[in-house]
Length: 299
Image (cartoon, rainbow, N blue to C red; front, side, top):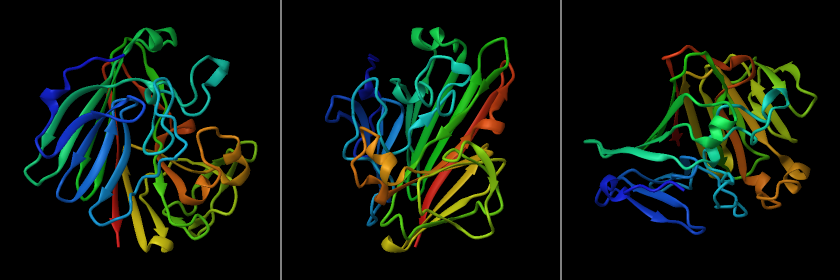
């Protein structure tokens, strides 16, 4: 268990730390324009809501807030592999970053009222046993009228570091049957629900009418989540990312997921900023790569 003197990082009336139900430590952030929560467990953003708005992030009421388990919802950090680890090698689904305790590196109160927290993950005995002994990952979250997230990975080893990553963002929505996603038109994607076949999306916005697990390749485009039930549009802009993943488990798959409630699929959609599959990162010794995602509401 990570132990840190967190009082030094608190910002009066803007950022404090507490223990949430289950005993996990979180930072609670309040700015004039928004509020947010970021857990040290997984460096996991679980809440962001601009003032006067419905929460933008979805967290399942069935989620387990416990050490060693990923939080179901919010923004899980996927690293250093996406999905099951390849070549039959051992390791947790979506890598180890989302189930590790991260250290707080810094906090900052900007002149414009935004609040920023920076967390870091370094190798430990568990990651070394999996073959990851020389990396440093830094996650910077800036809270204001936009939610800005920056994931920086540095290769501290002598060999090329090959990895996948994602900000696996769960968005809260009014009704899955009504939403659409624009920005991915014409892209090639891997359909994980259909034997990983490669397909091309048409020229219309993506609508969800069944279990959906699509890995859209070689796209740097922003996405817009249109949510007529809540009368809002959520814009997701990104950089340093060549993959966008869209996921909704639908009815039957949700029943098989222990930490999701039966009706969760109706009120969530994942739009993930990622580098995965063909777009995995090959990082030279001493080099760094930064992936960012910025989320805002357009009314």
